[in-house]
Image: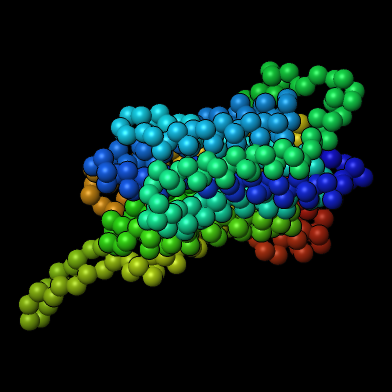
Length: 458
């Protein structure tokens, strides 16, 4: 993280723009199975669990690789690591077009999943160009590269219909190679790497980079990200199949409606970064979890038929979530998940400015594992329960646990910070749920001090 006087807006914005575009391309590649996987499912006659595993496999590589990629980025710089990563992924995507059996598809999908590791590379690289005042907004803008999922959900169905899924994979690989070349030619090494080379100093030892991972707080942040990012990836991959199965829509229509979810879940991440800078990261997390809990409650309700004993005999009627309402609820869910994704990563450079790569890599890895575990769980629950909405029931449980843990962790922090306050006062002066806290907190001498950025980010 740069000091304010070292901050160079022109160079920082160039690095941010190129990183965001590259991440968008990588994310589009990472979610390619959400579309071509539907055709592969039909060609191979896969069941729901096998399809869920196919969709989730790229997410596994993208998740596990993040912690190593984060460390390598701190050591070798984001410019080199990002370029090599895109070239390696392009090879795997191109080779995907020659695969014919399900087992080999899973192996090839592991290579495609390397694209998901681009997130932590871009986060670590971008954060090095900004000071603390602008970092949340910058990282939020970078995270808007998640819109690549919407690009795939919207554009890939038309490529598949026009050229077939194998040619679609080849087109994606060519675009990825072109992006890697542009990124290498236009960007430059980040300030920390340049300074280290100029001074001849060695990078931070691995043991020191991994030291913060012992803190429970880091794992709590990871759970948040398991939902806001892992859940986003899972739904972006699962929704096309959901629309086709639950609402009997065509693949192109299902992809378009899934893109409506993925679009706000991506582009508004920049707004989440700005809101985190302005109001505090944990405030934004309260908004995210609260609204998500309400949306998932509605989406979890399965179509149900009722029989009521009427005066003149049984009266039958049905209740379900209409397609229009379902789509609107997913868009609202995606919007608040985008805010939450930015808020989680606002925490990291504030608390761990010298370990953004390793801590961000762990948080990203756990979050990405959500994108791996959840689609498989969705498929298993469909096979076991036969209820389409079971996927939303599972996500409702994840949010409820995350919100509860976050809330009580904040209460414990408040008690440690201001032990003189009584139990009732702890709730009264919890800033995120007390809108007038700022005004009264400044006027009362016994009230806690106003939270700065670090306190909000806790």
